[in-house]
Length: 337
Ligand SMILES: NC(=O)c1ccc[n+]([C@@H]2O[C@H](COP(=O)([O-])OP(=O)(O)OC[C@H]3O[C@@H](n4cnc5c(N)ncnc54)[C@H](O)[C@@H]3O)[C@@H](O)[C@H]2O)c1
Image 1 (cartoon, helix red, strand yellow):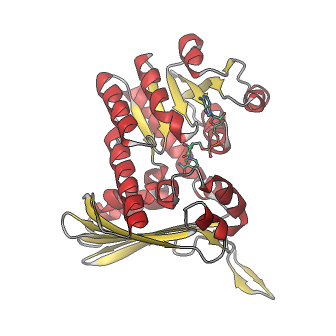
Image 2: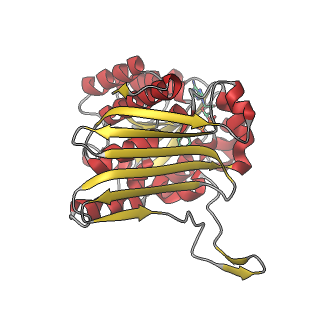
């Protein structure tokens, strides 16, 4: 079997997840190079992943490493130039979300993808590959809930990790840029339509540190879609019970709810606290399967010369909608998208 040789850029929280999947869990892929600006992470690549070809400079990895493809899991502001450089160097590209941190650079990435139609570009909106979300999409396509007209999405980070959210709040771009881009992508995907306007509000009751840097700890956005459909996104950072990601799609003939109880597994504890289902703790645990399936799909697309379902344009649109939502939240006005 031909193995696709991959170089990974970024070995932080998520980079390690992708690197382990490529190195050990995807039969038709092999991790042959790694790049990070953090020396300890390159040591990790050598010791834990067996990757000896390591770099601190991304362009050097492109020039020297024996790779067919790159997986970009660096800080978001690095994604677009690295996508462009990798495609121009003749590599297939997987980039984690978001596509970019402003629209100009997203457009530049689009142009690079268009310049290289023979190369695969894959954007890591991994929730589309989560088995429950993929099943929901299939059911909608089969007509199980009639015409879908509303998506209600909730994404609340665990209170246990709030210190990290507070630390990055000042530079995160605000709660919608930071947290809502997956929900924005899912809303467009499930309704198969684009939003035309948004209204958004936020509040801070528990951690004034968010307000102090112009952010909020909780926020809600309401979207009107072209065909009259509705989207509601609720994002937050203070779930006391764990990592709460829940999505409901409502249609003319029924609805689908994905993880209304964000359970860790199927075990239930019967003790002095009552009957308890523990909550999933964070994104690596909740979406472990989705991260593996999306990377497997990227590698399969490369092997088969097949374009993935999610495109670079989905990345630009979701980024533009996240910026429009942020404008609505800051201005208190309805914003046209
Ligand atoms: N899809 C998801 O659910 C999901 C979840 C978490 C993070 N992400 C995305 O993944 C990316 C990484 O997030 P993280 O939480 O792992 O961040 P992190 O801060 O833990 O890691 C960032 C990594 O990028 C590397 N890096 C930064 N600039 C670099 C450069 N110029 N060249 C090479 N390496 C460079 C750092 O060395 C580090 O390894 C972000 O874009 C984030 O939005 C996606």
